[in-house]
Length: 212
Image (tube, rainbow, N blue to C red):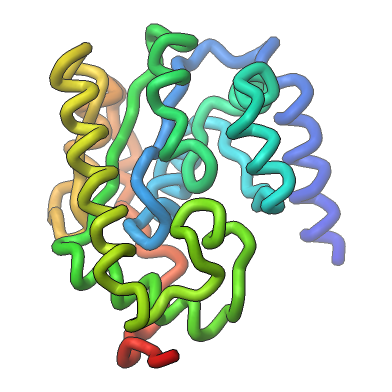
């Protein structure tokens, strides 16, 4: 209970005072969920970037998608953001924060990503957030092809956007990259003085693709 209260106070303090005390540029993780976004957030936090652990409701996400000012207000509260809704708002964030860096996380391949997403969907049940981004509250064999297409399209669109505008502001990493610490620190131009290791957070054991 005490630790939970401490985390809430920590998030409250950062959310309302970080924009006044932080001198760090923004970092946005723009990979879709189940691409190692949680691990990226944890690693950036250990490097000294303030990072929210808040999970937004579907209603709050819809507000962010419809209202850039609300999104920017939330972005100002922390140094680093990942997971929904950030992966689909990279264009607005690119122009709003000219010094920001973007990290596109990917799985080793689309099939591996889908299996992880479907496994989570089976465990968690229907999700209004999945409905927003994937067009269905459940991910499974019945919509596998359309879901994988969303993943591939997102990857292609992100890379094309940054290639056309400023490739230096995008880093692409995959879950099977062995030197993620070095890649990220070089990209952010910071020293990994404590020789911090990249975490493996939010791991779930794979299962067969659910049928529906």
